[in-house]
Length: 411
Length: 151
Image 1 (cartoon, rainbow over the protein chains, first blue to last red):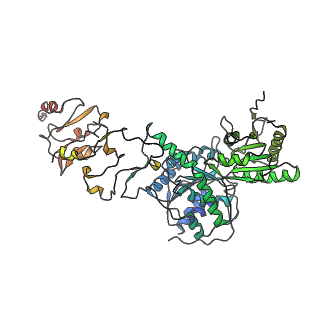
Image 2: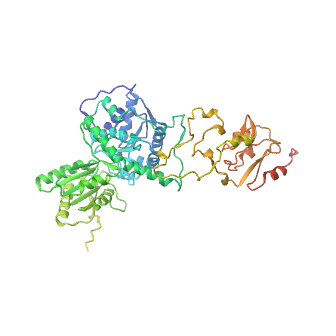
């Protein structure tokens, strides 16, 4: 029996330590891990919890991230509760197995501490790894601070293991800004947390010798399409289940989460859509502009990146006039992911707000309060003019001549 | 026991691979998980293949005979039932009961020739022939015992 860990009402944890404690409280059966900056302390601390008797589970040290996720797939197929953590290059190495995990409907929880992808090599935070995983069939949650990294981990087990879903779940947090910044975190007690997460209920587990099963079968053009379609439907249908898990989490924690978080949007004319810690910075900037410049600014943030909240984000945005989609990932010859997906969503509204795209913060480059205010001021100009007054895609915080692309065709 | 008795009430090779019943996306299995048996399989390892209730997607019920271009032919008159071929066959396509060799499972044999290679008799009790070659003709043309070569 695992030992109980005595916790204060308020702990001072960084995002990594918060995630470690959530994994400990969920009493994960198998963590197979290969550490990588900045996610290393999650599995390092977890290993310490196992060594100190706070977890009744296995900690498997493997030879690569590919092996880490493979170990997770094996353990989950065998019938255990499974979790791990990674970042950046390690995430990239896991990608092949990520698709296996979701195709096999294994509810693994993966902490992704977001970091840039090489080349050039970089250990700082941006959302390149998060974006790399967006078509992998995983549910993707995003935490904007350490408290949320803890909360989203507990919710992730409930969501992924739900009998109507059975899909793996990623919990994203910003490398260093969240993962290494100590903040006040209010944890649940071990009892309350485990009660919320619940006893693991295996499905089609390989260790049930009375019903031998094959995982990872090959399907060609005769079966593949049907299986992928069913998997996609499970993801799309996860939306109300995620909402119900968030509602139950509010009952035990007092903290309310939504598939799309909206701040000051009721009367907002201009809205920034962002992910990660930028959400909190944008909220501060929006409040400043409301107080000092009379700009009705608001912030919208997808808490759930996959399944993409096409419905909820459209509702959150359709009453504003101009939107700035903030993408913290090198767009690789396209408009940013948030821009593309938000544009598609608001294009199906009657109001069709103006959407522009801001690429920022690559490789951990700071985004300053003044830069966010300038983006809001840009958006205000668009809203007043009734058309996009700038280029559609702009790079923010970049040295050298202004880098920007595409404009609205108005004739 | 003859090979006919083993195969008579058996699900072996009932369907062509790919000819199984196709269903829509709403009926495919969760996570592409495929069950091996229709019922409780706790003691399945104590039952012979022909007595196991294999499920639709178990490869046992599918035939892949069309993959083969050459086939092993078995000569009962020479075989000493040493079970070497049974041990080495990579596709469990040697049918044997009570340590007596009965024949080849032509639904799953891929024609790799390993059984012929490991057969210790002189002449061999298994030889490879073209897939279309008649088995009776093959047995009628079986080679004589080879003499030891002079040193």
